Image 1 (cartoon, rainbow, N blue to C red):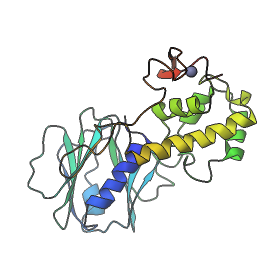
Image 2: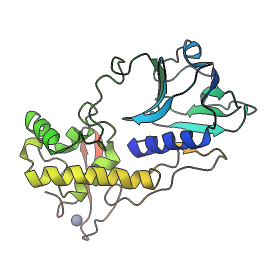
Image 3: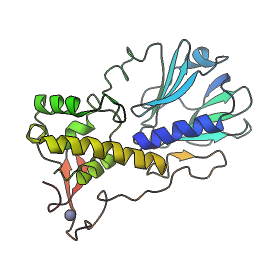
Image 4: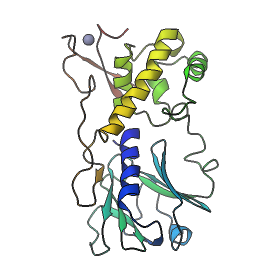
Length: 268
Ligand SMILES: [Zn+2]
């Protein structure tokens, strides 16, 4: 499942590979995604210029003078960047953004959990209005985490994965960050020490930056313009591991229905 680093990688790849920012048209092949694709998107974006391409949480945002296009990759969304418009759509292709220079951004999604929406104002759109702070921004700091941790009495793993609190940290990076900061994933948020808070913030930022640098973890989510995978599997420390670096067998428990890997010796 694409997380923040993967989405960031995709945004960078779009910026690098799509040489035109002028859109010719929006073609729908199969409107059935998590929400049915609105036909009006074509009217909103065709013959318009993209001002900015960036990530907000796990959304790819193409921003225009009069609004934004929000793309979410869901579980299996893949963005293919094509040099020309001659490629026939294949089975799980859902839509194309065709640029005036012939470049094409194609969205493919086998499990159809992804989405694409037009938003006049991101602050009012139902998908983005409640998004929490960006983990890599200055807003994610000790003061913020301390206040939220005291208010909520939930396991710290659930807290850092709550998109309304912190946006873009998913299961893999939550596990990795908690391991690095030596905190048990089930520790209650209001039991965290000052040291825990500081180390957790640093670890989250560190883990995400490292993943962005290596291009995210998943090979499935993005293909380069020439069709080769854009991601390289990066080295994870605890997620999916059998043994911790200390030699102890890694525990895997379910927290909120999600696999949670941790070491009983290294994390408390
Ligand atoms: Zn250990």
